[in-house]
Length: 98
Image (cartoon, helix red, strand yellow):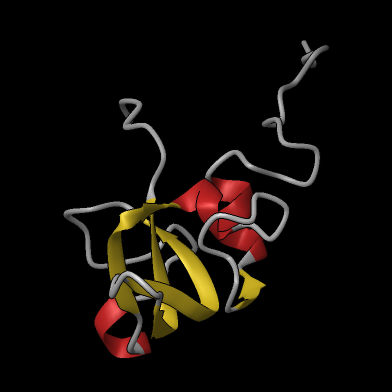
């Protein structure tokens, strides 16, 4: 798959900031625009997740502080699939088997 940059956020709830902009709340998942599923495989429509195309996925992490004020949980599968694991770098094999 070609590199697309960072995915956007899909969340179970929303809130409106002081500027009147919708922001994600509740459970946050990573989502590629133009698809109907999250990176962990949940269907957006069946899971009743709301799309936030204007919020990049890294802004959903509590350590960034961006749009994470009302986010209770960041999906660990989406976080790993997007390459933003616990250490912030993706996994690579250093010594492959023959």
